[in-house]
Length: 267
Image (cartoon, rainbow, N blue to C red; front, side, top):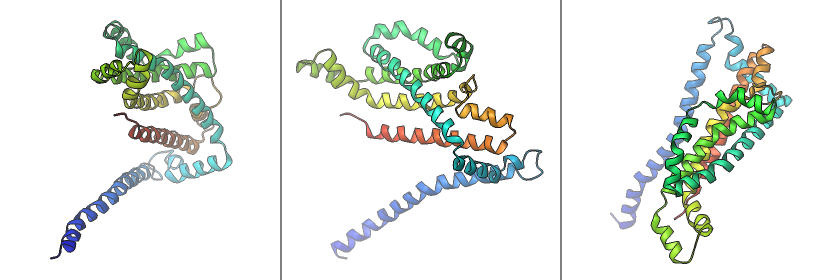
């Protein structure tokens, strides 16, 4: 056997393995999706329970196509996205500086761990009455609840990322003349960036879950409000279609941050 034939023989199994891996990468999610649709169809067979037909895949998908085509869902989706990004922005403005402070100072970590862990254990939705009394009705209490939900993953992951930075890098930077802010911006934050992005990703998931019930609180737009509206109109197909939109948008946002997380890093 010639050297070229041997090389071809050795590369063939690897090539076929890569092709099988690529097929599996797409096949497994599609299999899971198909199984979910089948279970949905079986649970809503005509006559299985009184409202089965209203919640069937056919009724739901027809309602979704109609909502998208008529533009009914877009204003509510836009309102929800504005609130989620406003809340995430506030959470980042509070969580990242606090996380940097705690990550750099052992005394700060010890002093704040008790109160922060206590507050973190309080459900964000428990703040609803206080948010309404303090901020009134409208967007502000919703954004506040989103921020409360999102701040803890950002804060804790930032603190962990800062504290995990190799101290030799800091000493090397100082030996080269970097001080204070230069060490923070050129060493600590770049090294901790993957942890910060992970914190934002976790915060987004928590905040997206909190947003929907928060939008049932005295606002007249948003996906959470639209769920209540469809319930009051007995538009059950639209109700379930809205749940599909919520899941799809949340999944899409998570994919974006997952992709960003895979691209950031510092060596």
